[in-house]
Image: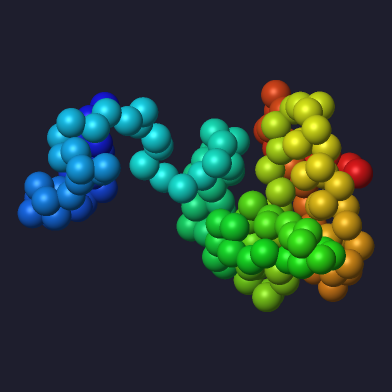
Length: 140
């Protein structure tokens, strides 16, 4: 997809698109791989967000935020939960969405989740994955 078409989809004004360049080349000459028009880092996060919208509509969840905070775990070590849910009674719950993987990055994410849960016991932390029957909690 041409970047100009993508920027039009995102609502950029035509006059801004017409005058913009990348390394001296007009945007019309730059080809980029199209990225999703939303902010989610994975298909599972996108799916969970769509389901959260339904939970807000039916009153189960008052509101939710995507990656709203960064928690400090140690010097130069932080953790950013995927979602923050606010329930009607004011309860806060951080939700981490994980696919099924055994990569080092996946395991580091699980370790940071566990540390954050221990450091901030006054908040609820839940790690979920998508199973055949729906969302399943990952116990760590």
